[in-house]
Length: 109
Image (cartoon, rainbow, N blue to C red; front, side, top):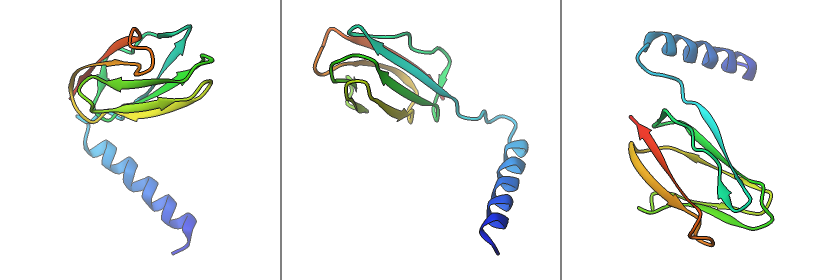
């Protein structure tokens, strides 16, 4: 089977499975912007499987670090990092370099 045929078959199977499981929502991608030494608004209605892109617009390096140590995303100046949510719950986070920068994720199953 040629590569494009394999890709087409894979896409068709993915579409069929998505239609066969109406209770499962597709994962969403959200962006949280860090600017002026603050985390921007965190999206509501987060779910396990969603992806957060942390966009650092500052001149300084930051992190998005969970207080429970479940994630630690390094964010170079003018860079970004991603996080796929793997657990449900309320997860407070902060920047390791600037502990006054805080926020929390509320993740549903």
